Length: 172
Ligand SMILES: [Fe+2]
Image (cartoon, rainbow, N blue to C red; front, side):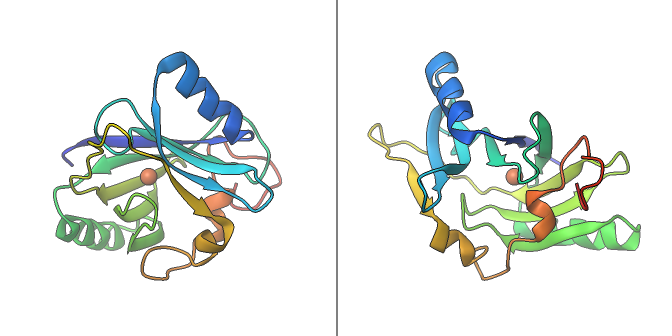
């Protein structure tokens, strides 16, 4: 591990969360998901030139206040592949990846730690937002249905598994 890269929270009302971080804490939106009905399903925000410090995605169980994952940065994609082998050899549950995210282009791998939280190891590269007139990238519902960058479909548990778990919801 090199450093903590970002965290990803779950929220029921993404728009309200985005406005909170924009208006009261001064974060800038760099990418978002907006569904066909106009509702927001995901947001990626930064306080610096790093393309994102944290994200929130919509909790499909409609439960407030849960964690989706925390992410640690590795130096290279090769390190992510090595981490996958280390996890595999030691019986750590791999949820999805290694693959490349469409949003923010991160090379990712997701596992569950023994406490039940989702942990991502990723190579974020050096994506910096330097343009002062940067306009947020808006991902549509159709674009998101294509899955991740090279076509891997977004795994179902990605929308439901969070911590703390929701009683009675599979993969919650
Ligand atoms: Fe992430």
